[in-house]
Every structure is written in structure tokens, then in C-alpha cells.
Length: 607
Image (cartoon, rainbow, N blue to C red; front, side, top):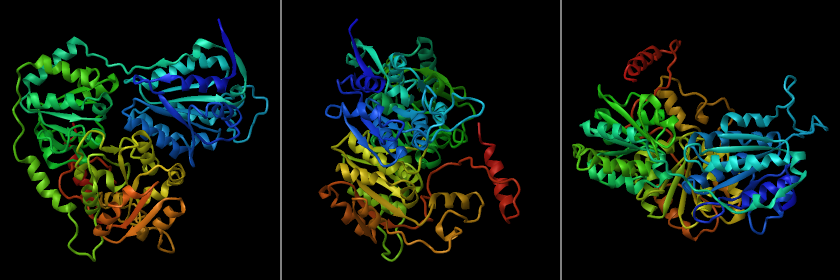
């Protein structure tokens, strides 16, 4: 057997750079790296040897560069991914939040944190956490609960099995998620005679599992028996590439479709059977058909509490739940009748099985009434002296958007408002990280989206709170010449949670700067900060100014930041559904007892 002598780190990177997707592209598009003493000598040298054929990018923060990698994979519908490497200790721990985000959202990313010495000779090394009861532990064990596959590489030859397992997990539609290969730093530099065949290019296909025939028959029978079915489209529709199959299925049987945050844009906003967003941040049209539905057909959804109104949305006494999902874990939630299969395959086979069946069309007028209620909220304000609302900001961005626009966000006020109000014209036009709703995802995520699809017009919507939490990859995007627009809505604090605090009977406290324990109210110049990071930035004072600034975005190279002050209080009053946020049972504050009583009444609707 022919062999080649390489260090373990060189072997890892050579193997990863030879793995392909079905389109013949390198499955891992490259590696994000911040080097330290746990990875600079071994992994750093290995990546340098491949720099002309396989890119390495330098980020500013381990968490945010991982966010960029995850956003890339999401926008690519999981057909490509990225790797992220860090040193040991704090560098590795910085990636834990991103690993949780990827796990919750079922998104592939490869984490390669450096680890302590397998030989333990220099213990304790710099940044090593010691456990007096277990000598094998390091901070990297924190990755275990947020990884779909975890391995610690303590011998070079372990890569012969660990690397294929890692790629299998990342490309398996049911198991897809973050993989962590914790790489001991002395092992990275150790040489081994590797089989040359190990580095032969390999194509990783995304399997499309077909359903069990019994499950298919049972679900078809439930649909035939239903009088008022509804389809909930989740993120799995996008990952399966099932948007066309969903449209064909809905049209064939006259079944209304509602969309989760992850599923939004599965159908164009103006499709006759797209009744809009569902759940806590949903449209009245979508929630109305869900409340009366006797069959809820989930397609690629986790049935998160925002989707189900904390399981208080579906009010039909005889309602049945069906879940089409490639993962059995998700397909069987809440006693659902499972159809464990690829979404596209399942919809196509169900359409054949149902033959000439027709369902009762959804009530007319629901969608028109919804837009009649909310469209005026997005119009430019008549009072030029008042602070704009988030709804008016969304309206300005919507008017500036086109078919190639991708609007993206993750946390704060904007996810709920965008879910309700944004009109997505095509699949992939709406990128929301709402599984983890991770503050700080936005700037790095926008960069990752643009790296995935350079021809798209990416607009990042971010509040001042999320921007303050993590903005360092603005500098990376500027250095790399990656162009996208950022609209920062400055409501001087955490406006979203302030409204939630008020809505659950609490006093305004510690969310807006005005109610926080600070001596001086801040005057943060976000435009100056973004300019200092290398972006092109302006501050506008009106919706008209915002629209004028947005019109110039195509002429700007690199990140383009537009800052606008907004009113922290208004939210879209229409639509929505109850969300289970526990209210204190006992409080000295007047009125809290009434809020608690109302909460207990609403909990009775949960089923």
C-alpha cells in the first residue's frame, strides 16, 4: 500500500480539501482561523501549505467567524459548509454559542479547536482548565452537548475514522449539525505514514430518504379524512429544495400554507395559498386557519413554541398532527403521525397517493384583510418630527428591495416584525436565524450570506443591542471587500425585551438605557464606529433619508451602514398569538396578580 508521510494536521487539511459535494465543488469552502498556541504551529502550518488552492480566512472573534460559516451553510441550503479553528481555552469556548446555534438550526459546521497535550508532559499548559477528578477533561468537553458528533484526536491515525464520521454527520440530512474534532496540539505536529488512497477526492451525496409505505398510507388517509387541513412550512422545505413540490402539492389539493421563521419564502408572499407567517409573530390570516384546522401537516419544522403559540394555537377539538421530517426525532414530536422522509420526496409521493382528492379551499378574504390592516404601518410617516417605527423602516427597505435581495436578521425587535411584514418574492430571499435567535449573528451572518451568493443584494437588519454585542466582523468584511448593507435601528436599548417586560406585567427596568442603572445616558455614534471599522456609514434622520441612502448601496464597495433612530415602543398590533412566558406567581407590584390570573387562563388552551 502506497503511503505518504504527513503531520496529523497536514493530513486533516489535505483530506478536508479533497471532499466534494454533488456539484463537484469542495464541500468545505475553506477555513476560518484565529491562531494561538494550540493551533498555530500544527494547523497553521498545514493551512499555509494549501493557501493557494484552499482558502483560510482570518476573523476577529471566534464566535462571529463561526456565525459567518453557519450563515454560509444556511444560505447554501446545506450543500456546502465551512470549518472553523481556534486555539485552546478562551478561543475554543468562544465558539460554544455558535455551536449551539448550529445544533438548534440543524446546520453543518466543522469546529477544530486546539486542545491540551495528549502526552500531558507540560501540564498544565497556558489556558488549560484542570479538573482534580478527571485528567482527561478540557474546556473542549463543553462542545459535547452542542455537537452532533464529537471526537478528541489523541493519536494521528484516529483521523482515518474520525474524519469520515465527521463528513457523514455534516452531510446526513437527518443528523446534520455541528461537528467538533478536538485536536490535541502535540498530535497536530506528529507525523504518520498515511495511505495515499485516504486523500482521493470523494463526493458526499445528500440522501433523499423515502417514506415507509405504511406511514405514507396512514398520512394519505388522514389528509383524505380532513375537512380543513393546513400546511406549516418549515426550514426543511428549503434544505430539501422542496419549494416547487410544496407549491404543486398545495395547489393540487387547495391546502393553505403558513410559514415559520425558517420556512418563510418557501412560497412567494403573493401566492394565493400562502396565508403568511404563523404563530406568535404570525398573521391573523395564517393563525385563523390554524386555529380551525382539523389536520396540521408540518413539513420540515421542529414545531418550536413560536410556531405553535406554545401549543395553544391549534384549537380544533379533534385536530390531528402530521409531521413530514427527515429526522425521526422531529417527525414524532407531540404525538404526531410521522412521515419520516425527505420533504420533496414525501410531498411528491403523497400527491400521487392522493390522486383526485380535493380539500375544501381556505376561506376567502383572510389574506386581503391581513394586508389591509398591516400595509399602512409600513408607509412613510406623515409626521416628520416623530421618530420612525420599526415597521416604517421595514417599509423603506421593502420598497428598496428587488428579486435578488436577501433580508436577514436574528434577534431583537426585527425578527417578529419582519416575519409579519416582509414580503419575500422567492425562496432564499429571507434569512432569519430564529432557532437560537442569537444576538450578534447579524453582521457576521450577512458576510457569510454574501460569500455564499456573491450576486445577491444582502441587507442586514440589526438593532443597536445586537450591534453592540458583536460587530467585529464588520472590519473583516471591509478588509475582504465583501459588500452588503446594514440598517442599524437605534432604539437606545433592548426595545423588544422591554415590551415583553411590560407585556408580562413588569416595570420598565434594565432594558432601555433610560431605565438602566447608569450615570450618563449614552450618545453612541454608530456611524462613526462603523466608519472606523472600515465600512462606509451614514446616519439618516427620516424614512425619506433612509430610502435615499439605500438607493446608493450598489455603488459602495464593502459593508455599507445606515443608522436611523427609532421609537422603541410601537409593534405591529395585528396578528400574533399567545406565547408562554411565565409570570411571577407572587409579586408586591400592583396589578401583577391580575396579569398572573390572565396567564393561568391562557395556559388552559395549551394542548
